[in-house]
Length: 94
Image 1 (cartoon, rainbow, N blue to C red):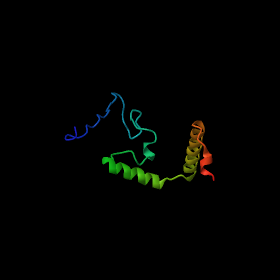
Image 2: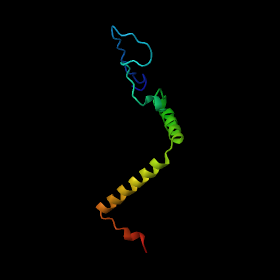
Image 3: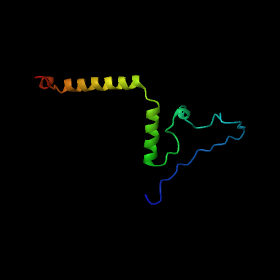
Image 4: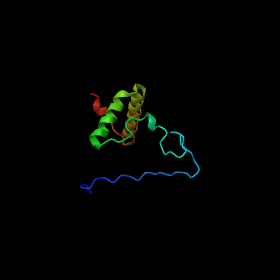
């Protein structure tokens, strides 16, 4: 399998009989609604290319409020987990 390469998926190319296509806004086009805003969608060749585009997208659109919210959620979940397993926090105090 590694010698031949990956198989490309077949494209869906349905052409209705009585439809005159005028431009890009075809009701039969299969595209995700947020693909035009994503930079990671497309022909990324290889794992390194995917990581490069994902890293560039992360650096370009970092959201400070979302990062802070994520850290708070993770901290609360860790504390709930420690409470469930009855972890004794007094070992950190003198």
